Picture 1: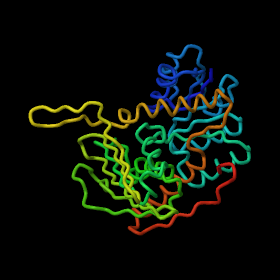
Picture 2: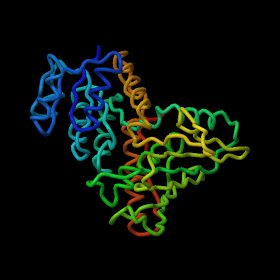
Picture 3: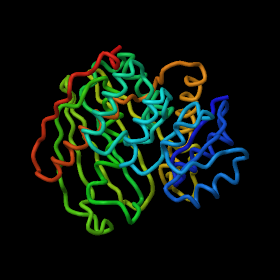
Picture 4: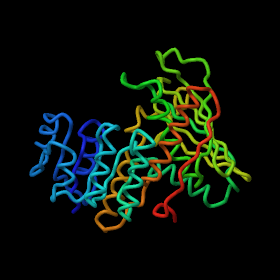
Length: 335
């Protein structure tokens, strides 16, 4: 049984807590902390024997914690991930790995200095059954070399704290990581096209069209619409030399009646990717229990996503094509 310390008991933290205590196998939550101590205490009431710590660093140092799950506010991720690396404990960090390129570089440097992988970043699309099937189709060579990809990331709406650049840093970043994983190539340039605004978007520039280029010459367009009202709709189609591969519909039931065909659309990301989150954390727990390094998105992946995200934000601000250069990939992250 892996003894987990949970940092952050907000929405995603409590969702992962529910997952680890009620859905998945092999985990027991022995310690928690949150910036709001009263919230942490209330959450701990449902966890017999769990210790409430004043700080994330105290939690990481707890000998009753084998591995750490970080679900706190993004700007705090760096300090807790670095603390886990220093303690030699595996850490699952919800995205982003950190909120700046420099912070991501420090995490990569610390992990390289430790000489082993300890960090996994929560990019859950890699664990979604539809995306895994799509990648298998591309990797099989059945459609020939992949040349382009069309993506859509549509939200019914976004919360009030969503900022103008969140459409890149919180939303498009999932496609950024997915594209790197699906094509097996780094992203080398980004551009953002801005159409007329959606009247539902307030002062947000919504929608946007993000254009990405990969090192191998593939082109990817990502439609970002975050106030489209009708539901949460994720789409993807890869165009190859000899055919195409497309994400299938996520509807389990299609109803035909009254001269119409209808299928439900997920309301939000929790509904659409619930199973992917389950698989993601279960596979991570299994590797921790087996004493193996994490096999999912690495600190390098978190760094690369941050650099591409920053470049995409720059492209949004300037309207220009922005070239992307990553630092040399350390040997720890090759192979």
